[in-house]
Length: 103
Image (cartoon, rainbow, N blue to C red; front, side, top):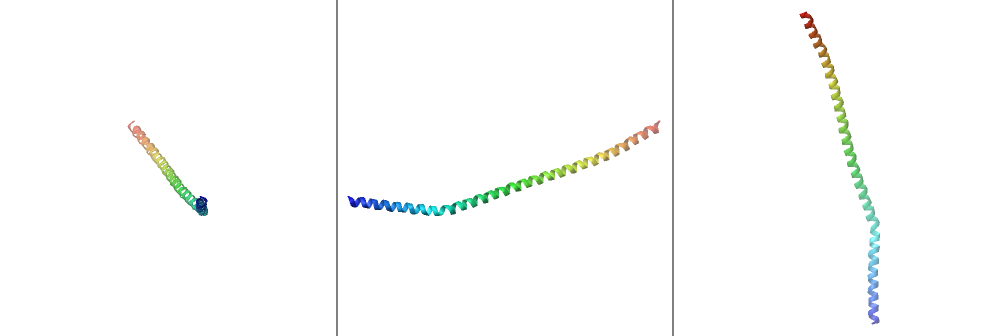
């Protein structure tokens, strides 16, 4: 019976040694794994930031272009208004001349 107990103890010690070795191996791998995960996270954050920046730039450019087009449209409206007023003045003069000719 003592021999059986000794064998069990030896077997338990072997299992404990295997667990320690496995734990030591995993402990050695953890820093490298953590570093890789950190690099991956940083890279993903950079990619996300770049995509967001590109989106914001595109929106800003579209807004700027829209403002430019709006400004051009306002200038065109002012030009057309000035033209119309010039024509209106000529039309009034024409009508007044016609009326004075009839009298």
